[in-house]
Image (tube, rainbow, N blue to C red; front, top):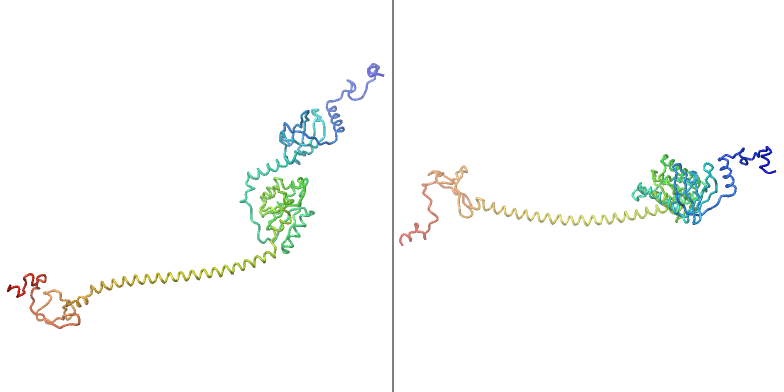
Length: 413
């Protein structure tokens, strides 16, 4: 019997949507389409070009994947977006893992993305570059803020997985180099979900403790995804904020993480980190011997230089003293000469005499002599007792026989 004849006969088909009497709700229709599409398409990897990318404030990403013939709308829910290194750029070629579905609210066909990879390392490189630029803008990559490692640490904190091979390597190397060093393991998750948070929390515990001299943070080798926690910006800022010098040892020698760039010292491997953190006792003893020899040699050389310097100073002092003595002797000689020239004895030596009273007063003029009184006449080689007679004027010494003085021969002429 046909559907029309059944309706004419009074029968109604109860299948939802089969008749106007049992219409299907729009939400039921889109939900059924969702179930049908998801059942028909298992999770698939799809290649395409990103276009019209938009990041919603709630953390969801919306964009389209297209090629030359078609495009499909895509969504990355916030829970999945947080697991991706960075959002894609428009025009970037990517491969996306997801599932075709229908959004029941609008009935839109869309591709729900769970994982996203750019051709090559585009997304990872972009995420690293963005993180590096933010840290560089805050001055956390400046070489000047790097702190020196302690010369002889007593306690070393190791932030890593307690089950990893890296911890075994660090313990072996550290105890071989210095059996007395104290290693404190601060366990942390080093890969996968929650690893960045675990590393940040471990760094916070070390900072609050404050009982170690140096910190080693890291892990052994692994894939890019395994090492990605050490490229997390939160971990890098926690490393920079730690009050204790930090050695970063992530992966192998060729692996360089953001954590390596921010740490005070970067080690190629965990074993190299232990060598950098813990000085060898044998090397320290040899270094002390070398320093002792160097000090002894330096002391001898310094003593020799001091002796030579003192001898030079002594010679200079002797020469200077001789010059001072000679100058003073010369000056003294000049003073003696002047004194001798001014001395009364020198005057007497030239044929002059000095008249003095018995009491010692000098008789320098005619008025000082009293006729009949005794006086002493001082000459070059003694004293002559004399009596004053009559005084007369002193003859003019400037006139002589040639000037027509008292020379008898001159009068006769």
